[in-house]
Image (cartoon, rainbow, N blue to C red; front, top):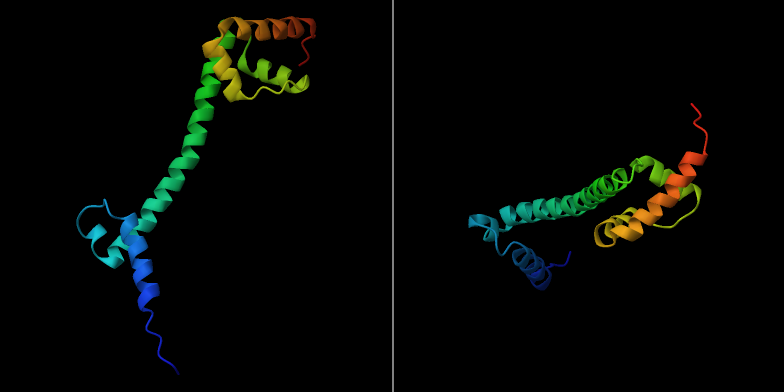
Length: 124
């Protein structure tokens, strides 16, 4: 069996790890084993944060749209239902931006929906 020294490979692996954990405190940036564990934890936490940010922003957009729509007399779910039924391709992010930046255009969209909602009979 031949001997494998792994000098370059191991050095490169450790160097990559220590650059990842360079700002950590104490042995979390100095010793390989603890740095490895903390590096893995940091990567998991950053992934979780990126996923959570998407959820948080969607929730924020819904709150903004709901607040703007209710001032025009329609509920949020009626707005979304109408947009889907008529295949209007405005996602929540764009609707929230329109509601904040151009209130007049948003109220025109909502007024068109309000007319359609009043025409439909209530079925329960």
